Length: 470
Image (cartoon, rainbow, N blue to C red; front, side, top):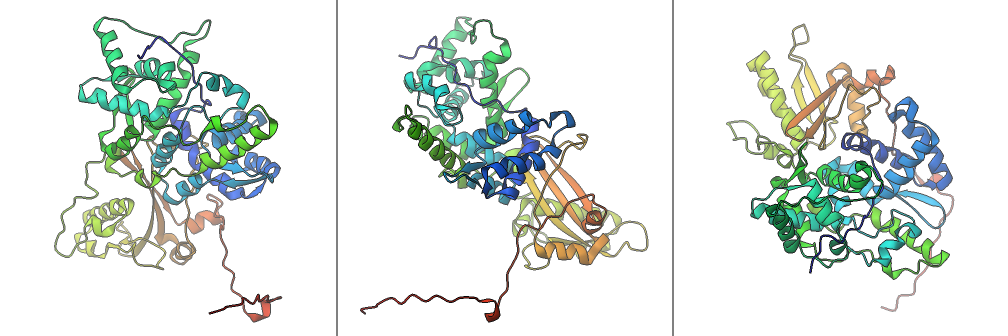
C-alpha cells in the first residue's frame, strides 16, 4: 500500500540553468571530441584550456572548470568515459549529438537511462540508497503518472511530482504503482491537504533542488512543458517518445548496481569503469528519440506545403532546415524580383557541390542578379541562443567540399545557421566565412585527413598463409 509520507531524498549532481545547459552542451561535446582519445591527465589540462573561453572571466578558476569537466560533462551527461589503462574516450552519446545537432534527443536518451542508484556519485555516497533497496527508472514513472493525469484532466505541479514521486521512498523502492500515486494526489487535493518536502534547517532551494534538476532535464528533452506557477504538461507532439518511457515505468534499471561488491577496492573500481562505459552508450531506444520541428511547436508548414507546377515539395527537399531556408529564399528573392525566383534551387541531394541551396543576391546594386551559394546547418534545442551574451559560442562541422566552395565563391558563399527552438525558428546568417577566417572572426579547424599512398610508401608486407582443406 502506497504511503506518500515515506519520504527519501535522492539527489543528483547539480547542473546549471536550462539556458546555460542548452548553450554549453555543444561546447562540452566539441571540446571532448577535439581532445580524445588521450591520457586522463592530458584530458584534464586540455579540457580546461579549450573550455575556459566559453565561461565569463571570473568563472575560469580550476574548481569551476573541474566541475564542468568531471561532474557535468562526465558524470551527469556521460559525454566521455575512462578506460582502465588511463585513456579517455568520447562517448557514443556525444558522437551522435555532434552528428545530428539534436539537443532534445540527447536529453531524451539521458533521461531514459537515468536511474537510482547510479554511478554519478561515489559508492560511499549512495550506499544509503542500497541500504534502502532503491531501484527505479524515475523519469519513466513520472511520465506514466503524467499520462494518467492527462486522461483525468488533472494538471500536476512540480511540487506534487517532487513530493509524491521523486522524493517518495515507496516509489523509489518500486513498491508503488502510478495509479495509486495519482489517487493519493487527488485525494489530498479533495481534502485540501498540501504536502511539502521537509528538511530540518535547510533552505527551500535544498529541499527542491534535486526535483527541479530532474524536471529541467525532462523539459530540455522536450517531453514536458512547465510554467512559472510550477504546472507541468506533457508535450503531446512527443507522444511516441513519451509512450516509450511510460511503458517502461515498472521495468528495473538496466544497470544493476547491486551486482557489484562495493565493499572492496577492486569491486568499486570495476563498478566505476563499467558504469562510465554503460552510461555513455546510447540506449536501445535512441533511434526513436529524434526531434522534429513540429514537436518543438511548429505548425507543420515545413512538411505540408502543396506542390506547385514546376516546384519542389519540402518532402522532396528533405531536411527541415534546408526546407525552411529554401522557402525563405524563394520569398526573399520574389519580393526583390519575381522573375529571379526560378533561380532558387535546392541542391542538397547533389553530392560534391559544397552547398545546399543556390540562390540570388537579390539586393540593390550591380551584383543583384549574381548567384548566391548557401550551406544550411540546422540544430534543435528547447531554449534560444543569446547573442547578447559576450561569451556565447557555437560550433558546426563542414566538409572539405564545403570549405572549398567557401574559398571559391568568397563573398557569395554563406552559412545559414538555423535554430529550431520551442515555438519559433531563428536563423543566423554568416557571410563569406573564408574572409572571416582570414580576419580571425571564426576558427576553422581541420578534423580529418585522407592518406593516399602507393607502393613506394609500403615498408613491410606480412602474409599469413592459411591451410584450406576444401
